[in-house]
Amino acid sequence: MDLIISLIPLLPLAGFILIGVLNKKLPKGMVGIISNTTVLSSFIISFYLFLSFIKGADSYSTELFPWINAGGLHLGLSFMVDHLTAVMLLVITGVGFLIHVYSIGYMQHDEDYPRFMSYLNLFVFFMLLLVMGSNYVVMFAGWEGVGLCSYLLIGFWFKNTDYNNAGRKAFVMNRIGDFGFLLGMFLIYQTFSSLDYKEVFEAAKNYPKGDPTITAITLLLFVGAVGKSAQIPLYTWLPDAMAGPTPVSALIHAATMVTAGVYMVIRSNVLYMLSPFSGEVVAFIGMITALMAATIGLKQNDIKKVLAYSTVSQLGFMFVALGVGAYTTGLFHVVTHAFFKALLFLCAGSVIHAMGGEQDIRRMGGLKKYLPVTHITFLMGVLAISGIPLFSGFFSKDEILAATWVHSPLMFVVMAFTSLLTAVYMFRLYWLTFHGDFRGTHHQQEHLHESPSVMTAPLMVLAILSVIGGFMGMPHWMSEKLGVHHVFNEFVAPVIYSPKEFILSHTFDFSLLIGTIVALAAVYYFTRKMYVADKVVPEEDSETKSFQKVLANKYYVDEIYDAVIRKPLDAISEMFYKIFDINIIDGIVNGIPKVTNLTASAARMLQTGRLGIYLVVMVIGVIYLFAFKLLL
Image (tube, rainbow, N blue to C red; front, top):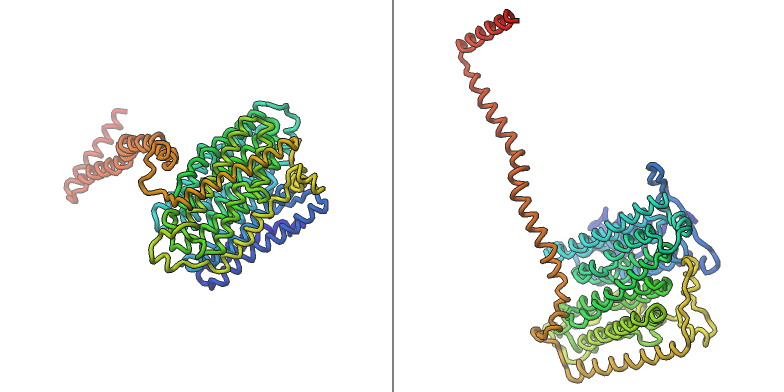
């Protein structure tokens, strides 16, 4: 079993090394086979382990080799696979494999196709390392690795300066969060003399609720989660990360990497359950992020930017669930979100592919008849993320809303309103893209065509998962009717410390269901009337009303950061450059050769080449020595 577990991350790593070394010497077909086969093999092994857990297995652990032996710290490069890890493995390798398949069609005409596929394999390796590590150090190694891969893939088309800047922005902002994560790890070791999960969590159970040390640890770890999972105030890197190829957006910025922070909090649930204050902070940051990102999404016109802000908002939903103690619910939304958000991004890629690179939805329209498979699968994704009953997003979102109602009715109102906004901007995106008249150029219209089957097949699979994926977590009233349990909660429960129950009355459940149906029906009607019947299309200069302009410009957060942080730092750097660097550092560096030159010039005067002068100097020296001896 040790070998089988180790193969899960090592197979994608082998794919990266093989493709990276041989690179363009390999035929493109072989590149696709290697990259896809390694991830598919990891998925098959992960599924085998998943089945073993269903049959009653507890957890598996293995150590590849001793890694760190310093003082009292003894850690190995070791893996642990339990119920939580098993879920994440299926998401990473399953959705990752579908995106790898899609990438064959989307990227095969790119001259750097082998480099792209090798980067995808490397990302999968680091993501698997992150979720499989049995201690915080291995998790952090994977954490930093996915950050590196994010930088490489966002700036994949590095000849474009804007793309490089987007990659650099993601890298820097993630390092801010990672600094908090590191401090949290240092404090964990100082407190528990270990960084191994089992040892830390077992020792933490002896601490009382509200212990200030535990609170400090959880807040520092959450800083890391804020950076990696794009929460306020470190969220601005994710929308800019859309500069990367669309499969990158689907894999890293929708289905896997950005959920790393969510996974870390769930893995550390023992610590967070002991710190109610940290839970409130997590829930509050998640709520504000979800609402703010949803309002920004209402006025974005780039198809990928709309989905990017949707991702930020949905991550906020997940953190709200974690903050109120509904850890299994947050993980449930991670899974359903991976299905429908990967689907939506890949459908967006199919649209961009058909439009010759165009991403502005104001220049689309009427694509329904040209892209039938993309259209129907995109619609499935929209219905899922909007929370239409019986689609996957409905089950996980309603669980989150139910949990927030138990925790705080005010938070419930905010999150319900945010959920409604999600439906508004997603249906706006759908109508403007696929319905009405085509608003692009005649040349674009002539070349509109459905994507090849290698791209549409993953869309179909993800669409099916977006439709049926929620039934593994049916609400209490539905499971009672069907005589089944909430299988997802039951599966993950063994890794959750002191799980909370959020079972509400049937009256509330049915009220929430009816309210959801009525609200979504209203959204469907009014958005269809506006964007299809009335043919309203946002114009370039129409966002002139004050608040609409604020939303279109994303609350000017980037501009505020630029004015408050970047420009003052640039000014300070310029001052230190002119005063300290040029005058002192350069003065010392340049002064040494000047002194040397002056000394050498003076000494050179003695080297005249005249024998008479040398004899005179020698005689003077001898006289001086005699005089010196006599005086002594």
